[in-house]
Image (cartoon, rainbow, N blue to C red):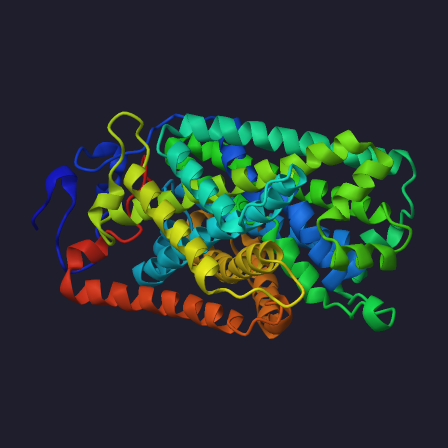
Length: 524
């Protein structure tokens, strides 16, 4: 049996000893900045990816006006329960495997390299389009804000500015990203909690207990009105889908394990704090927003006709113009911070795949001084810029709308989010299967019926169900744009292509195949 430097065996017969892939013991691979961030740093890097203010100001109006109406807070509660159950197995796996590859590494260990490779490429695509999606949301609110000051700026210049600034900041040490995201996160949470306190403190316009009734999460908004003022019936699946989208980012904690001070402890804590904390916050804040209107119909009318003012108008009514203005700025900075968090995670997926040489090895290099995955980060910036440019050149503006609303918000933000969430839901379900199989085969003596079997099973069933219903409602979720179907087809092709690529490596370059998802930090 031959060996490469650092102990990587190149035999072609079977699985290599995982210990030989421990990057902490090797001198021939580039490493990230170990011990750079603590619990708060990991929380800032991940919870900001979920982007509380973006989740509320972007997604709540869509849920209220096009989904389950008064059941929107209950939809967030349902997602909280399912994702907490998902986290049970995910946390158990993170205690065994510390790797920058996150889902990619977990699935590779639990279900094999072929599905691991497919998942790795799928996650790269998902997080990559999420950054572009948030650039669309950022551009929508930024152009509106600039217009208030008399500046008429095309949305794509704002989006490209965001791409460029994120690229510059992410090039440097992870400390910089963590601090910026921390400031943004604390600011948006503080002012949204103030919004909640003011609405409930003044008794709201109509505080309905039905908002918390679990049954209402699965009821469609009833259509009402007539003529130009008519509001069409909603689809509860839309509300639940956007509830799950509001959490995307919390699962990124394991990707920062290699850079955290005590990953086996910090990563699990960050997971539970983020999923439960966000859940409580989302339920209360979405309930407060709906309570700011005299009726569910009034809230739905505002959500459909003026999503921009859905939170801002009650903020002025129950607070003052200052609160409204602060929130209007924080949605811009929050969108930026969210996009930056997704950028950082995408870069680490690229880095992980490059370090294992299943993608060009240059992606697996780190900066000599900053220890950041600078080449992977720059690559992601280029991809995000190309997506923005593609929408600017080829997307069309809907009749009766402006380009910032029709292209930046509805298409770039909405459809890119849909494309990514479809992948996330599928991969999260696959991770749950991987967790069950990993503990069943590798740690049978540690197997726990709830942690390693029942919780993953519930997670799989719930997320596959939401995914199936979302695809069934694709025309609705896709805002009537038929190319939404092509986005799902691209998702499928990426995943199938990943399996094909792994099989190709298995037959043509077995040593490279053996490394898929196997580079871990500080052993298993």
